Every structure is written in C-alpha cells, then in structure tokens.
Image 1: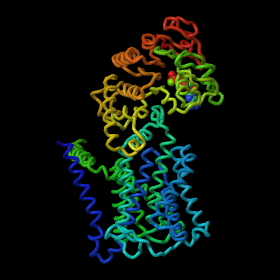
Image 2: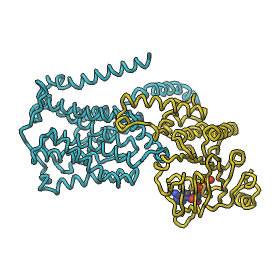
Image 3: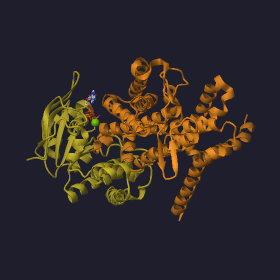
Image 4: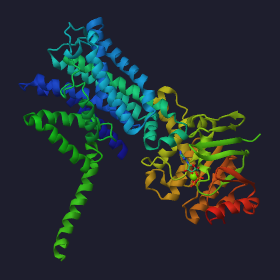
Length: 347
Length: 257
Ligand SMILES: Nc1ncnc2c1ncn2[C@@H]1O[C@H](COP(=O)(O)OP(=O)(O)OP(=O)(O)O)[C@@H](O)[C@H]1O
Ligand SMILES: [Mg+2]
C-alpha cells in the first residue's frame, strides 16, 4: 500500500517535473528577456550534466576537478570537427565526447594509482594543461584569441518537427539540450541503481574490503572515470554548439576555466552528494540565484561563499535531503525553547 | 596435496623483516590457528596470502596453482576470502547490502544487466537477496537485515564481516581476530558458527586470534610465529607445552591461557 503510494507520488512528481521542464520556455515567453533566460536554462542543463558526471566519479570516493578541462576537450573537438572538417554537429558532438573519453582512458590508469588529494591535484592540473594547449596550439584551435564559428546548421527532421543548430532561436536548442542531457542522466541513473552502482558505493565505503570480495578496483574506477568524462565531453559539445565561440582564456567567465570545476563541486555539495537529484537541485538553484544576484556583481562570490558555508553547517547532506532536516531542526528548536527558562532561573 | 602451501614466505618493510622464511600447509577441511605476540606478523601473513601485499620472496600454492603476487580480486575469485582485523565492513550500507556486495563474484549478471539493470537483473537480484538472507540466518543476523551496519554493536558487526566473506563462497576462509573484543556470549556464538561452517560446508579455516581459550578449543593445529618466524607447529596441547611458545609469550605479555 505505502509502496505503491510511493511509486505513484514518484511518477506524479516526475511527470510534473518533466512538464515544467518542457513548458519553461513558454512560461518565460512573455518576459522581455526571454531569449536570455532560455540561454540561462540551456547553461543550467549543461552544468547539470557536468555536475552529475562529477558526482558519478565521486560515488567511488574520488573527486575529479577536471570537469572544465574535459568540457573544453569535448567542446573544442566537436566544434573543430564540425567547423573545419565539415562533419554534422550531431556526429561531431558524439565524436567529441568519444575523444574526451579516450583521453580520459589514457590518463585514468596513472591517475588512479594515487588517491585522495593527489588525485584531485592530478585532475586539476590536467584541466590547466588542456586550457594552455588550447591556447598554444593556435594553428588548430585559433589560439588565445579563441575560436568562433558560424555555419549553416544542418537540420534534423522527425516527421513535422525540425530541430536546427542555430544561434537565433534558443528554444529549439533548449529542447535539444534537455533531450541530450535527459538521455545522459537516464543512463547515469540506471547505472547508479544497478549492480555497478553498488560496486561504486562499496569502493567508496571500504575499498580494501571491496577488493577482497573480488572487485577489480582499478578497472571499475577507470570505467566510471571514462564514462563520466564522456558525458562531460557531451556537456562541452552542447556548450560549443550553443555559444559558437570558445576561448582558452583564464578568466572566471570562461566555462572552460577551472572555476567551472569548482562551481560543479559546489552544486554537487549544496544539492547533496547522496542523491542523484542533488546536482539538478544544486545547479538549478545556484545558477538561477546568480542571475537574480547580478546587481550584487562583485559581491556575488562572497554571498555564494556565505550560503555554501551555511548549507555545509546546517544541511550536511545537501538540499536534496531537506525533508530529513525538518524534524531535526524542529526538535532542536523545541529543546532550545525549553532550555531558555530553566537557564535564566539558575544563578 | 594441501589446499594451501606456504613456502619460505618472506616480507620485508625496509629494514624490518615482518615475515621470515615462513613455511606451513593448510589442509582441506581443517581449522588452523596462527598465534603469536603483537606485531609477530600474523596479519602480514594474511595480507600476503590475499595479495594485499606482495611477498619479498617465497611462494604460495593454492589447489596446486601458484598464486604468488596475484592481485586481491583475483585471489578472491580463486576462492580465498578474508575477515579483516577490526570491523572492516561497508558502514553506511544496510546489513543485507553488505552481504549483497560480498556476492560480487557470483551475481551471474551479464554486462548489460550488471551496468544497467533491467528485468533479468532484477529477478537475479531477488534470488541473490534470498541467498543473502540464508547467509544472515547462518550468522544469526537475519532480524537485523535492514539495519545500517555501523549502528550495530561490535559483536554483530564482526558477524557481518564474516557474512560478507561467506558471500564470496570461499574454499578457504582467513579470519583475523574473529572474537577479539567480544563478550563471552558473543565469543561462543562466533565459535559455534565457525564450527558449523566446517561441519556442514566442509570449509577450511585459518584463524588468527589472541583469545587463547578460543584458539585452543577451536583449532585442529596451531602455527606459532614470533618476530615473523615460525617457532612451533602442532596440536593445541603440543603448542601449550612448547617451551619456545611460552618463552615468546612471557617475553611479550602474559595472556597465554
Ligand atoms: N604496511 C606496512 N609497512 C610497514 N610495516 C608494517 C606494515 N604492515 C605491518 N608492518 C609491521 O610488520 C610487523 C608485523 O605486523 P602485523 O600487523 O602483521 O602484526 P600482527 O601479528 O598482526 O600483530 P597484532 O596481533 O597486533 O595484530 C609490525 O612490526 C608492523 O609494524
Ligand atoms: Mg594483526
């Protein structure tokens, strides 16, 4: 009874969520800056995918800060393939992600020889290496000036529906991003809830014990790293075909700069590492918050830092677990209220 | 031919020789005890057998095959399981999930089912769950199947560790201090479970333990090591009366029973 009720409420909330996601551009339409908001929504979808990929690696207990770097690989590779070789963006995006995964596979073995903070540093520096390579290989990438490309976009026709890679109408691209990110998240979700997800969990909780029951630690870590980097590459490709301008500069405004990795980490922690929906909640909430906080301009990092610290202190499991906090807080509050009077009567 | 043959096993950590020229056999179906004062190298021997550490020299032969230097997951696949010293388990998972993880080698899932689940995989997981319940029944934890592992008392956690090892369906089970830190009742329960394993499943056990009473009552044979060297091998009675053993323990501590 309660179980079927739970599945029902799950199905219902899923449907509502999906409906909202699909209807968002229409809801935003009356706004004067609706194109801008659609642009933000596309970025949110991309960052959700990047954050979910980071979280997949984190499920095994290792933190990769290479997100920005792998997004850069996926973005540049698919953009170059499309603009210079003339491959269809659809294929280019896939090839870009495969290229990203291949590079991840190359570095995974040496990287996973080390653990903890050393692994973090390795992935972090790799991101910087990609950034500088993109800057210095100017014959290929356009160098520090960045790389712009405009092209007549090929169109995908499914019946009467046409989807095009254009810069003009963001709404179509928004749906494209939602579908691509949705497929990627679906795959990640299935993996997390199947046997392999259990293996990741076991590695994080006690890697030596996992090994002693037959888990090939290295193979599993490499596998999830490669898969996650593939999806990070997809995120990069989605970004590239959205903005049509890539840059290797090290300004925080550049998505391929290391700051993006840090943001992903924040979205992941704020949203809640334990929940699959953590990255969705974290990225959506914070990216929207940042838009509303535009007037704060340079104080934004300060505000964000403050909120983050509060969340870490009061909601260690992230926003996704908000239901668990309510009874906890209310009992704390009650205790506090009860203590007050006795506290004042004592000398 | 013995199930496991340990020959001239040596492990050096820099200048320290933790295990030195150790040679002994583990016979099919026996319970072998390994005792020795703190720091004698008992856990290191287990680490070497399980592949967690690579021996400096010496060979390990399991069921006629050389397994020296194989990585831990391959050793596990050959049929050697281990209960670690201290409660090494999956602390945030439920008791039954702990056992389910232990079944990693026997899921019977194909690649697709393993990665993405699906109908077949779900049916398989159901069967695995039943098998896991049987194992929990055996160690007496069936009632607590859905509790979070780290929330249980020490004695029960030790049984979870055993259940995880049993889930790998081992031929040889290595137990590092299975009853240390338990009260008398828990000790009795654990020893009874271990005896039952041998009696009903013909499992071979190697037990490292400081609780002398437990070791003497449980084991068929005992290997005593001190400073990484074997100083005695024989029945519990022979070991108790061996002057070298008494000297080793008197030199270190007074807990020989
Ligand atoms: N990884 C390691 N690196 C360096 N020295 C080690 C390592 N593992 C064990 N040792 C040393 O080897 C010796 C044997 O340790 P071991 O853990 O095998 O002892 P033990 O017999 O299991 O002791 P206890 O009864 O306290 O568990 C000790 O001196 C220990 O400090
Ligand atoms: Mg030990």
